Image (cartoon, rainbow, N blue to C red; front, side):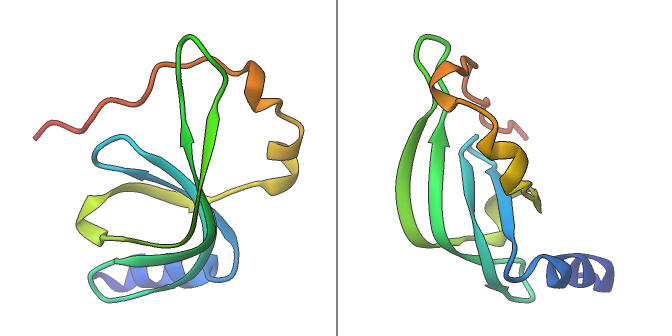
Length: 100
């Protein structure tokens, strides 16, 4: 893993992050650690399941490991801004799986 990525992830440790996986899953949790292959460990995590017909379903995952080769995007998550959103009113198509 490049030093730039390692440095960026180090800044996110003990902060809330949002992870989008290759198969379109959206997981929110506190980044507790990572390794040289970008596998990440999240605590207090939940998966957000989006639907065009219903509000966002939040599925508790607890401590969760995401393989680095399955991560499409990871970034810091603004908890305060998120609290302002009523997820039961959000309608969105699920993210499609990444096609290579």
